[in-house]
Image (cartoon, rainbow, N blue to C red; front, side, top):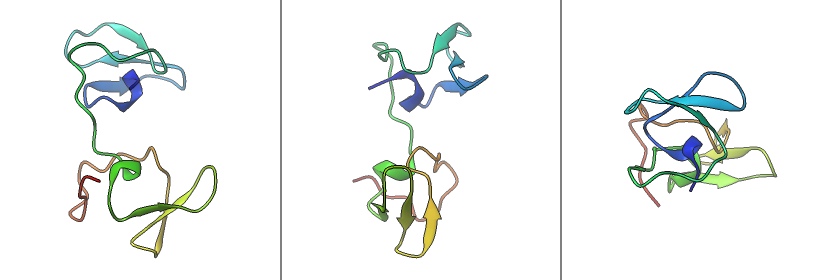
Length: 79
């Protein structure tokens, strides 16, 4: 897993972000630390299916990005 997949990752630009726990600057694609907690994202949901390399469908109806955060989605369910 990478920092970008962690619930504590806060993006500050396309390539880097900040750890919400430590307030340190981190690179999005670097390997996750020992405090990693997987963030709910569309790609981890049972209702999501990939359609091509960059897009998928939620519940076979709504276009969604795999890395879109699903923190407020009432239908999110872990795969």
